[in-house]
Length: 343
Image (cartoon, rainbow, N blue to C red):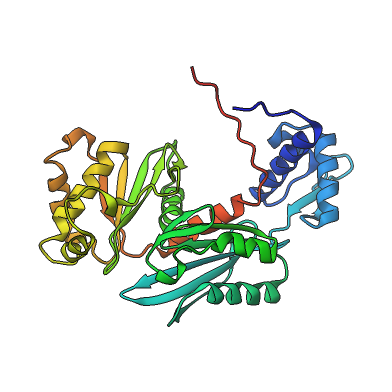
């Protein structure tokens, strides 16, 4: 790993991000309280707050209650300084839909809509984004969920045929000059699931989606981090060596007596490789009444003590949106990760 130069610009960016994140978690703060929370000096916090006041990212509120001396100014993070667009495409039984949400800088949803689309393509997404930028004017980042493999912004295997081979992310970034993240829908969804589980420490967790009339896919969190793989292909469980053609697999998945055996093979493979604390089963084919059969089927190969909790979540809208908002907001932050040295 290349050494990270500890220069003044980088340190200032880190400190600024620290002050902003601290204020986001507080109703308001004074220079002294922010310094206490961040470990920075009062002078450093004051300089950063003055710069954030000029940009509008922070606003002054009323004076703090006096404890005998001069009352201190209170500062508040301006959550509506700018917004993000979170958009996702879904296809179910040949019916396409496009959903979007506008969220502020602390993740509060300002507007949310969904509509059916007869023919989904790049122009539909581009026109929707253009309209939202015209409407809000202060969009800073866009996150787009795609039901397929996304590598370096280019769509690979995908449930939407019109998207295959398209560099959706790079095209949008070139046109709008904004931060654009395009990801497989499972990556966003598993991240949202993980956030909403509120684990006390980093865990390994997975979801497996079984949609009707489309191939299954999975999303994986390893010790608190999304597993994407070298070419973002991680989680494509329909490509496991199931000794079936793609057509045969699709037919078996959608048959009443064929679904459970295939689901067991896919889930067993995930358990054996990543040993998760729990696995969420989603999609129209994942029925609560099949959960016991799937669990018992996995026990044929997985020892009981290594079995994760299995549960069914029929509607994953909240988790998907949570992951979309969280990862899109993270794309706006200055990213420098300090890693503990491991022997």
